[in-house]
Amino acid sequence: MTAVTAPWWREGVVHEVYVRSFSDGTGDGVGDLPGLRARLPYLRDLGVDAIWVTPFYPSADHDAGYDVIDHRAVDPRLGTLDDLDAVVADAHALGLRVMVDLVLNHVSSEHPWFRAAAEAGPGSAERARFHVRPGRDGGALPPTGWPSIFGGSAWEPFGDGEWYLHLFDVHQPDLNHDHPDVRADAERTLRFWLDRGVDGVRFDAAGGLTKDPAYPELPDGWQPGHASPYSDLDGVHDHYRRFAKVLSEYDGDRVGVAEVWGEPHVIGPYVRPDELQQAFAIDPLFRPLDATLWRRLLAEQLDAVVRHGRLPAWAHGNHDVKRAATRWGEDGARAVLLLMLALPGCVYLYAGDELALPEVDLPDEAITDPTYRRSGGTDRGRDGARVPLPWTTGPAPYGFAPDGTPTWLPQPDGWGTHAVERQEADPDSMLALTRRAIRLRDELWRGAGDEVTWLESLPAGWLGFRRGAATCVTRFGAGPDPDLGGLGEVLLTGGASDGSATWWLRGDRPGTTTDEEAGWDRR
Ligand code: NOJ
Image (cartoon, rainbow, N blue to C red; front, side):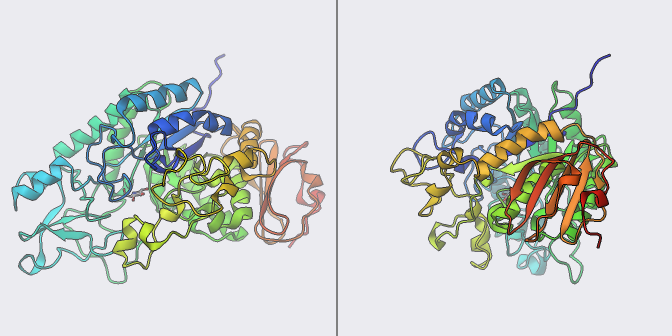
């Protein structure tokens, strides 16, 4: 009999390396591929299965690399193609997989196609590769009232009566994926990186590739997050069917993950059997730590993908949201980490959250995120979650770059208190907990199937479930520690005694311990 092993990604742990802020190997204050390569042993020691490397392609840097000038090259400031190959080869030698981030929804306004479109004039073939419409009122007003996700209008005038669509910054024109050149180019890009041996792909802004060709107005009362004519339309799934076919042509367990922000019913269709392997479960990131709410959220996320034979891709954090330790408090970040690692599925951890780095309140003049400018300063943007990592206790740049190098986003005073060096020496640190949890997860939870048996009669404010021969119990917020003895032997705890916490227990009588036996108060 041949043993069937699940692909690594099904219940893997992926570390998001925000490449500009991870490690600077060249001494210009910006993280890069040589810097990442030198730190791969740290990631191996963390115990993750894979890294997702954020964009390293030539960029005009209007959105920290998500405005791409050439999808099949490396920005010289971040390294070379040889450096990328070396990262992949070294990672593989260390047992790590590498995922890259493909930004197919839009390009940089400095991409040759867009430069040509700007020059070619109204009605030109060059403009057909983008979403270009005549303005209203003889060209004076945007074609529709669609808002940019970064603030302001989603349309920008060419100055000749036509306007182009940019769902993000004005320097990120949206590509028209109904155009054959655009489709062919996207597929070429996908193959280019798969041919170089990458193990997976994150599809940036995945829901945006199809727009309603009638460009209808948004309904009255529309709010961000509601259904729109430019996200998650039925037609977008044709693209993921094509990309999934390409992925399937390659050997090994390659994975495609859709970056989608919707509720479970919106993300489920992206993981149908002929589409991608994963779609992010991001929604919980925005939710307060409330046991009843989380029980529902988690169950809905599971249901939305398990019905297609897939498991969730839980996001514990990412570079677009506040740092977990600030969003949930450090106790909450620890408790949720253990909760997510115990659930069926793959967990995506954001680099620096294993150090419990807090969100940094940067000085106004240091902020680079376009959302800050486009919101007129009312939204301070996402740079506070992107401050370069502290590796050593000090002084600045704390081992991120050679001594004395100013970093692209300034590190605050005292950043060294969170340093890897310090946390490696502290058995109670977030880093130590993360390492222990990832290892123990393999033993306790990996391969335990997609079934979660919720413990139904926990006290208010508690959430618990059994999977396989182990039990995970989370207390949301402060409260008395119950007697967990009846549920099994406590193997790991993450959180705080006066805050949220999660316990992992090995049940010595799997499936037979009742809540009464465990000594829970029924409510
Ligand atoms: C999602 C990325 O995570 C974010 O950082 C970026 O600004 C947008 N997509 C646009 O590419």
